[in-house]
Image 1 (tube, rainbow, N blue to C red):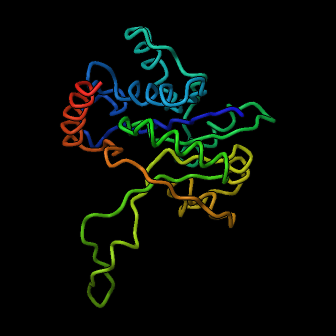
Image 2 (cartoon, rainbow, N blue to C red):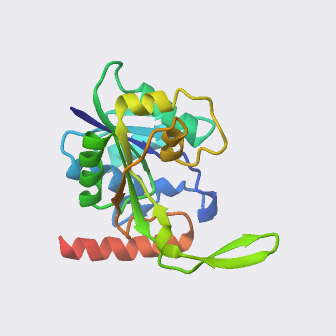
Length: 228
């Protein structure tokens, strides 16, 4: 069966406070997005990478691939109005009738582990879905009009990507009309009444969003390079 990954990199990085979109900021000698693509290629040799970028960033990405001698993905498609529409555009790049699995991953999560990726695809191939999660370590409080209260954190999980599904299942899910309650691919699939399988993620698999995240990214990149 074929394996695909749709890497969504539609953000403009406004919270980073700079002119360069966060997916193109260099860490460890190359742009964040290239680290993200590379880890999927290492974890699953032969995987077909579909990159979703705002149309106005395609030229910049092409130039970066030339500058860094980076092999372009299987396909690069334009982003949509929302993440939901961007993933839908990515799914259209998969040939009709193709069977296998497809993951959806945030372009600014370059530190997903190879083990997490392989486990997600393996589980999705047997159960139809795989959602990586990690335990909550902070204390949680629920807030309502009457005040707040502590809730048992062991009943909650933080959700990561890649979220991996059978191709046919994800196509059907994304044929639904858009709903603002769709916060990730799991919520889109769940809206059809389909169950989800949770797998253990890795704590380093954070989404780079703020300038302080870049400091963490540089530190983690140096640490991982020493371990290789």
